[in-house]
Image: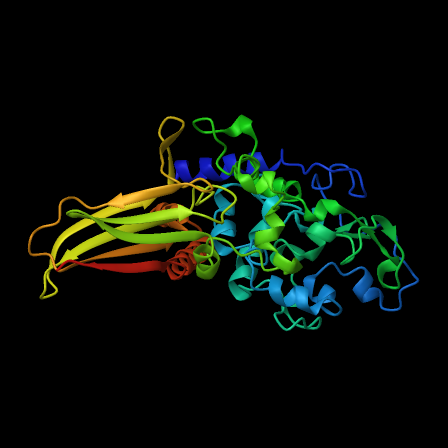
Length: 403
């Protein structure tokens, strides 16, 4: 239990220090430091005040339906998750608020006190989806505290009642742009730059383990050819401004970034994996694990030999945080997974590549469930573990025949 709690506190402490830099073309200084969405004064010019002051995604969906439809399936929409909230009773509401710096960042989303935090456990059990997927403003979900919607539209686009976003399509004009909706908005190119994502996806060097922060995505990107060629995070994770934010949990997204080649080299079988279209380490975080298996069969389908490798960054707490191994692929890097000598009666060799997106979290949940927990918290962690098990998938399977 202690190791799990230390991990949570360490991550939350990082969140307090993460601020996105601005290129000063409209984005407020310290945009992600204690972001406040709702203004203290209401713009009376708008007819429907329920939409003006409502920071819920259902309200945004009344006009921005395409963005909402993509977002509602994303990890951002489910950032306020059972696996996160189930850990909070053992941490206290102050440390829990530190976690919300990335999982529900708005000031309006923070817990007011310990009672507020405790109440959310039962609420999340009743409403595992923190928003109305039909964008119904009168639904029970739309009446939930805003934190249940996770990283919602307002987290990125609203500060003090003012709207911010990228320049209009096919137009580089920045600054305040007039318009009928919201009294206009402030256009800034920062929304199209990788640094905008750094507030949650780049941990500070001061919390590095073996020289590297636990999440080092933006730095990894800066060191890659993607950065030198001007390909930003949004180019892959928000193509054509689609708010889906796909990543390691999406099979097609991962397949699009890797190249697989099978070949025989004498009496060995080789699988070559190349990180061809991924602008950071694969995987970039400590939570996923990629397993590679190989099996040699005879002509009757009997397994004669097996091999196993993993692509992962593994850390553990042993009198301090330590890196056990870092076997990830960097951008444009290839790695050969080679079997030992193949036996004479082998007919074919099969390779399998499996992705376990939540491998680290599974261990955290299992450790928590082995200890004492509040009943509601236990139910949330049990759900989180069951959900994590469903996220595993087979990425690649290939076969080499031996005459």
